[in-house]
Length: 540
Image (cartoon, rainbow, N blue to C red):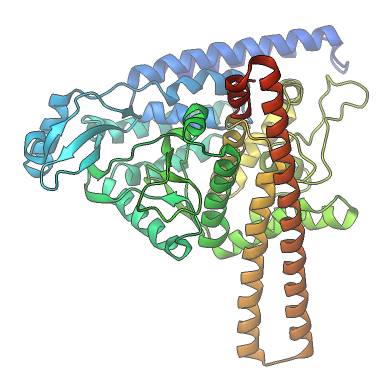
């Protein structure tokens, strides 16, 4: 709480100094804007560092809070970059405390349950840690996830403290709305702290993908048993999904890995309506295809940590899919009206807020930057297929726009406050897909993953249209108007499928050509070994 109060005072002081800058009614000079931008950046950095130390000191859910802040990329980079170390900076619980906790929960200790238990965790997160062990009953190698022993004791008080801090910030800065963050933690934390809920999510996900056997690379580790604070599952040998060296050594195509990740999460969001809400890099492993695997590729994508899942109402799921398809279309007056219509339906977004939502979804900037040349416009694509990776220049312009336009960052907080929480989680998932595609150093271009998402959107819309047709046929009977609507929907689906199929083939051909040119460049630079490394993305 002390860090929050100091941050509030710091911001209040900085804003008060800004108000004294320049004469009333006069625009700031370029030099004054530069001074103002520098002062805000320094205030952001001081405040973020101050809060980081407090979160690290208190650990537990406070670290979880910082991880959420780090994931909101529209916040000032001084905040997101400062909080990023919390993704990997968690301290393990001593082995004796784990043994005591297991005795408290069900009267058995580590020696009773496991014939071998590695005392050094292979992963430590804010709520739990994972150890490699051998199950005493079956003799199988297992991964044992155990909750930090003192988490339950302090969770209620910690959450109350977080809520008080969020309400304090809201009271002093009404325009900076962090209530969405508190609501998310209040809702999800109790579920994440019960590992039986995680086991149920894993089982449901397995059922929802069962009809895709032989068509997907997704693999979910088998859960042997789960209790409230301990979960035992099959141990997976593999590497982080973005480990390019591992992919090269096992002859795994990184483009295919990125595409499979997009298919997996698109299936969850647009078809199943039930999706993993925390699939960061550490929760995704890739391995060479196991002997009993049904993957159509030479690899499996293993999804871990099923503590956070969200259900999406059908109307939100389908309307969001329609919104995505409208973003694929080239810009026109009709298309813009269609986009804004579905933005209103999925997020209650008005015309003023629409550019912020579009930027959050596409990962591209759709706003003005006062510091840019000429009219200040930042390169805006006409559709999602007219995309590049966000450049450093674009990112810099976005940061400057946020610093110089008071209304912009307020609009971002307003967006976070007003849109459905499910939509916020979908946006977070979209950010992850873009991030993974970049970290895999793919050669197919960012539009490739958008095409995959769009194909699933087209499938979701077609399934919804067929369902509506059958319902109308049962209730109202057959009519030419109903039949015409059905044919129109079918032709639209065929058009999308054909267009996306052609686009995918063209992009994949280009990706192979880019890889070949990389190989040739590496060969001339350093021989066969250098050629293979460059083609694998190991040489930038």
